[in-house]
Each structure stands twice: as C-alpha cells, then as structure tokens.
Image (cartoon, rainbow, N blue to C red; front, side, top):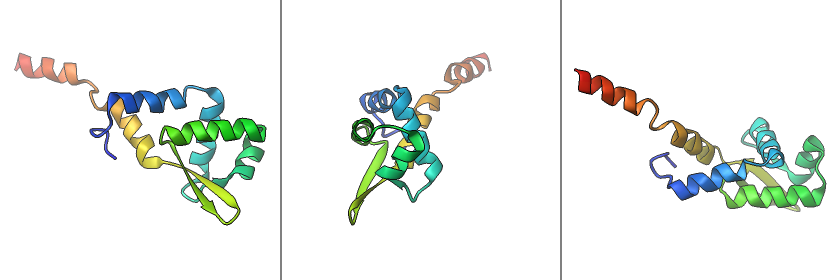
Length: 108
C-alpha cells in the first residue's frame, strides 16, 4: 500500500489507533519483534497488560489495519502491518515542504 492509496479517513483511523499509550506500547512491541510476530501470551508478558485489556487493544489495532493476526494451531500470532505503518508515515510526509518548493519555483 502506498501513501497515495491512503484516504484521509483511513489515515485518521490509523493515527487514532495509536493515539492510546497502551496501543502504542503494543504496536511498538510488535514492531520490535519483527516479521515473525508474537503470540498473545508473549505480548502480555512484554507489556504487562491484563489479557482482556490486551485483547481489546489488539482488536482495535487490527481493525485499523496496523496489526495482522494469524491463527497457528492454538495460538494467534500478531504481526505489525509494516506496509500500512509505512503508508501512514508517508502520508504525513508526502506534502513535506510543498509550499517551499512552490515558492522556489515561483521565484525562478
């Protein structure tokens, strides 16, 4: 997913999802874990969150497209959705310095 494909509503949903300190902690834990992801129990140990609280935050992050979940046997493996995270970061920066560029072009 490129940042050009990201609609403002989708970007707002993604930013709202990481607007909670607890959800940001969960997401950063998954980013640190890498592409292999982590089962819920490992996230719980690393964050110190209660199981029900963690489940709520993971559902919120997954619904915003920031976390993917895959059932493997009896475990659910959670992974950071790096493509979506990169699109969000790019969304913020895609217009970076656009006004400065236009001003430089107008002056030329």
